Image (cartoon, rainbow, N blue to C red; front, side):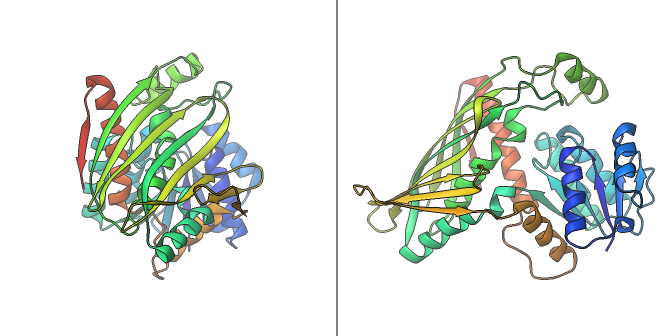
Amino acid sequence: MKIAIVGLGYMGKTYVETLLELGFSEDLLVGIDINAEKIKKAVKQWPKIKAYSSVLKASIRDVDAAIVAANTPSHHRVILDLLTKGVRYIFCEKPLGINLQAVKEIEKGVKTHDGKIYTAFLINFSKAVYKIRELMVMKGLLVSEAYVNWGKDRTEDIRPTPGYLEDEACHGIEVVRFLSQVNQRIRKIEIFGKISHLPYVNKNVQKKAHDLNKLFPLAPNSSSFITETIRTNSGAIFVGIHSSFLNIRQERIVHITLSDMKTVIPKYLAQMEFDTSEGDVLTIRVPSEERKERFVFRTDKVKEEIGAFLDAVAGQRLDSRLTDLNTAKLSVRFSDAVEKSSKTGKVVRLSL
């Protein structure tokens, strides 16, 4: 199997290293990046990798699959170019597209070229999430309330960014939405959000990115404050979400209240902390009891996710943790809805 990696920045290099750990040889990898310096560094580190400056210039007719780790605003263009070049299986960093219009273009391309595309929602591969899911299935529990705090300090990062909402806020929200489908069915989602645009990026770097691709905003959003009501066949789940690139420290926390599916009486309070120095940490407590159960998981989520993608390419059983196009589209619809709500001051409703 030959794999192309588009975008050789931090995540692109992480994917190359992961593929090598999974047993790939360098001569089975193709590196693509418009930045000549990144190409030079990649070839120096991995001399047998074939490197190109763009998808259209690359010799990839014999490539079986591609990983897209380029910047978010270019995702849809890169994916369409890959499909045109005959690459059917594509794994893309989240979000799938910078906005809903970009995702619709990808949908059209996938249909035209009979492509298969999956999006990297890494937290899906956390064993903390599946430990909660197992408990819910075993005990007959529903998510009844949730709170997400997801952020970090990005003020010293000189890379350009499309904004916090597009690149990061989706993770915790997707965890809540994934668990909210256990023992109940989501019918629609109501969103009210406010977005801040405090200055935090390097203006010169951001402008340079904007000049190359107008989808890069000159003043990207810095934080989002969102309330979400998930309407299900069992009732309503109220979710509070705070996400920011101006957190004093990295926090990736999801709080969940789990209730009995028949009585809706709270049975468990749970907290998931992702990517801590220990790993992913799950804490569970029964209401009114002081005793807590604490679980620590040190899984290499990137390796598991890429392994699942490669299994899909090879025609093996599809891992349910992989994010398909429809689920990735819902995430982008959510981001667009938050933007709309912030501008209009109104609740935005999404039907499923």
